[in-house]
Amino acid sequence: MAHENFLVELRGTTAVVQVNRPKALNALSTAVLTEFSALLDELHKNKTLRAVVLTGAGDKAFIAGADIAEMSAMSPVLALEFARKGQGVTQKIEGLGVPVIAAVNGYALGGGCEIALACDFILASTTAVFGQPEVCLGLITGFGGGVRLAEFVGWPRARELIYSGRRIKADEALRIGLVNRVVEPAQLLQTALAVADEIGANSPLAVKTVKAVMNKIRSEASVAARLDAEARAFSSVFSSFDQREGTKAFLEKRKAQFKGE
Ligand code: DAK
Image (cartoon, rainbow, N blue to C red):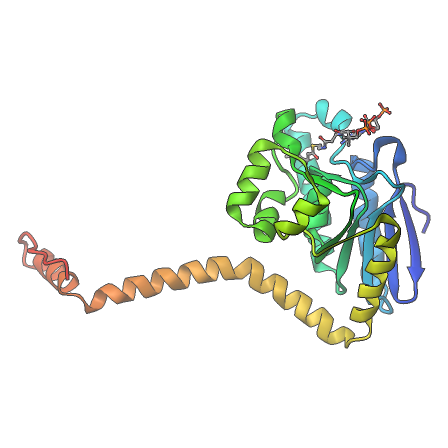
C-alpha cells in the first residue's frame, strides 16, 4: 500500500516507519492521522513483524505537533473528532502485538510528544526536543499525553512541563526518565534497530503477551489499586471501638460517644 505521509521500510523483522510531511515538520493533520491509523492496521496483520521503529523523516523533527493551521479553524465538535482520531492512533500503537520504539530525531512537541509517549519506550538523538506547548496556543493535550507523560516522569514533573509549555532537550529528557537513551543523530536508527533485534530474538508470543499484560496492568492497576486500598481502609475501621459504637448508637437512636480508637 502506497503512503502519502509515511515511509515504511522492512529491515529484517522490524518495520521502520517514518512520518514524512517535511513541509510542516511532520505535523499531524487529520489526513496524517487517518493514514497512520490505516498503516497501524496493516502492521497489525503482518505476522512476521517483531518490532516497529517510529521516527520522523528528515533531520529536524520527529513530529512537531498536531497541525496548528488545521486546529486554528476547528469547531469544538471537530476538535473532539480530532482528539478521538489521535487517541485512536495512540491506542493502536499500544495495542500492536509487537513493541513500538520511538526514535526521536528532533522536535517532538505537543501531539508529537504524545505519540512518542504512546510507544513502548523512547530513544532520542542529541538533537531531540520535547515539550507539551499546548497551553501556549490556548489548547490542552488531546491525545492522552497528560496521563502518559505522568507515567513516564511522575505527576509533579508532568504538571510543570504541561503548565509551563517549556521545551526540554535530550539531556534533560534523559535525566527525568522521559527517554531511555540519548545517542548521536547518526547512531539513532542503528541503535533502535539493534534494540529491536534484541527484542526480535525472543519469543514473539512472550513479548506480545508481556506487552499486553503490562498495558493491561498499567491501565487497570490504578483503578484496581485505588479500589483495593479503599476496601482495605474500609475493612480496617471494622476492628475499632468507634465503628461498633457509631453503628450501635444509630440503632439505639442516641448520640455516639467516640473514643478515636
Ligand atoms: N502545525 C502545522 N505546521 C507546523 C507545525 C505544526 N505543529 N510546526 C511547524 N509547522 C510548519 C511551520 O508553520 C512552517 O511552515 P511554513 O511557514 O514553512 O509554511 C514549517 O513547518 C517549518 O517550521 P518553522 O519555519 O517554524 O521552523 P523553525 O525551525 O523556525 O521552528 C519549531 C521549528 C518546531 C520550533 C516551530 O515550527 C514550532 O514552534 N512549531 C510549533 C510547535 C508546537 O507548538 N507544537 C504543538 C502544537 S499543539 C487536541 C488534540 C491534539 C492536541 C491538542 C488538543 N484536541 C483536539 C483536544 C495537540 C496539540 C498540539 O500538538
